Image (cartoon, rainbow, N blue to C red; front, side, top):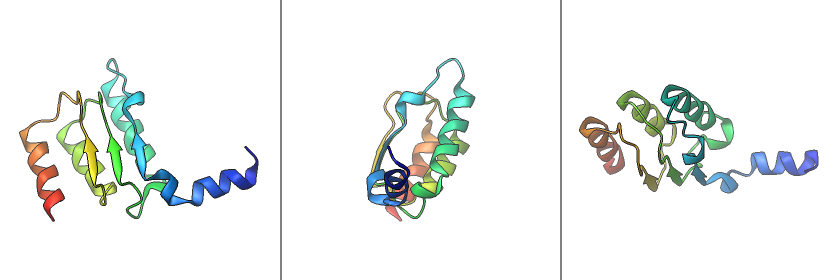
Length: 101
């Protein structure tokens, strides 16, 4: 891809409205998966409510990471947590509380 289209793709936030991060899950290194997810979502193209659909399947999140992701992705309309085994009641309460505000 030429430099021009790379810049266009990077700056067109609507292209990044649906993000599937389930492929970065590393069951042997769950902390690395959490760190990678957080780094990806902090990129400018994902900020300012650009993400509408977020799939986090198979990533083993701690409750603190869930809070950080929800703060970064503050405009999500659809959140998939399939096979996120470490999501506990506390995390779910936080997600539901944030979703209803």
